[in-house]
Amino acid sequence: MLILYSTPWCGDCKALKQALATFNLPYREINIDQHPEAEQEVLTLNNGRRGVPTLVYAGQAASFSGFSVARLRAWLQAVGIQP
Image 1 (cartoon, rainbow, N blue to C red):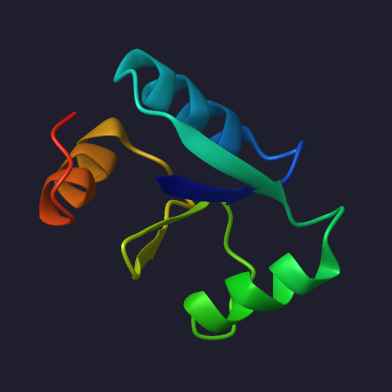
Image 2: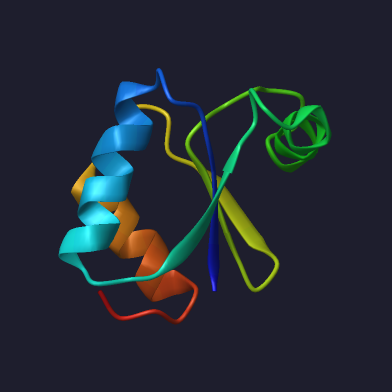
């Protein structure tokens, strides 16, 4: 399952969630504002940057700050998910 690290105030997070819903892809959302340990995980995944939204699937992670549907689609295909 996809894991989405996000915050409630992030416009890119909202856009990414909408795209995942359009693709009918389930995900588990973790709000890093409410879970400090998750914020540390995001920092680790993004080489020290607190970039949200960050998606993780099967050990592969990507930050989607500056969100685009084309970039999401390419990443999903790269990790083996057909949108």
